[in-house]
Length: 293
Image 1 (cartoon, helix red, strand yellow):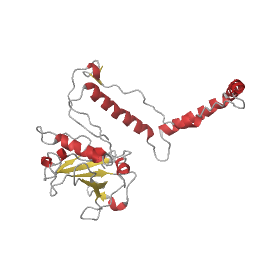
Image 2 (cartoon, helix red, strand yellow):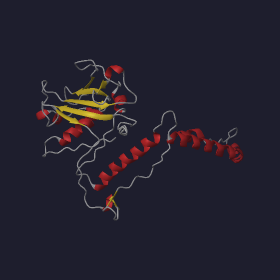
Image 3 (cartoon, one colour):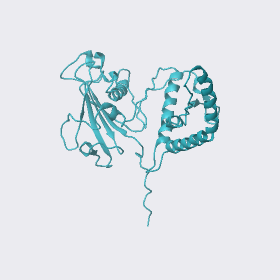
Image 4 (spheres, helix red, strand yellow):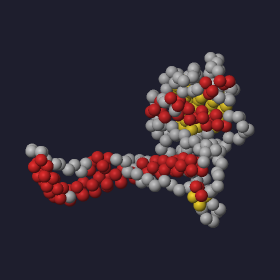
């Protein structure tokens, strides 16, 4: 009897959401016919200049900026640089979710995979104003004025954050942005919990707090002596005054632990040969990209 095939590793075992689909209409060079992009781990946009490749990337950036002035469109973001009430910019985002789910009414389910996702839409009625964000309930046939996750800043925290690396940025700028992405990946992994177990960061922070308290107690006699000496000196100048040394171990321990304060170095070179840092390379030209996870 043949063995059943091994179960594939769950592709969505991440701590945050994952983008499913982006639908753009009446935004910059994209007209009233919607452009729909299914978003996988790697998406390659191919087309001539002014075909809308950068517009797709900008569409996700602008919805993730909702709640700030960067989420407001300029007149040049409207088709033909004019506000047409019959052709207003619209961006729909569909997002896979598995942790911190919104209310059940917002949860759509894929028939073939069973994965859960939500639908949101942003619509700009005029320039330099916040968009109207709407949600699509699972059983509804139209958009709702209510939205999953509530306020924009709370909702944004549930979605992957975009990181744009421009094609014509200098190698130093490109390297800086890519290094930041790598740091965030490492930090997120360190702060991720497994079930009810404490994360690496929490475990390390607790140990640092214990060590700090232990050092303070061991130094108590020396600190007290120093306080007495300083108080005696100050008391001769300002009668009734004394000095107290506050080590503030709890406040120091409450600061986030940075496991990766040193920036990752991006190296390039032939396979099996010398891998030189990016800033030692010639000019690099890479296609724009945004997002991760």
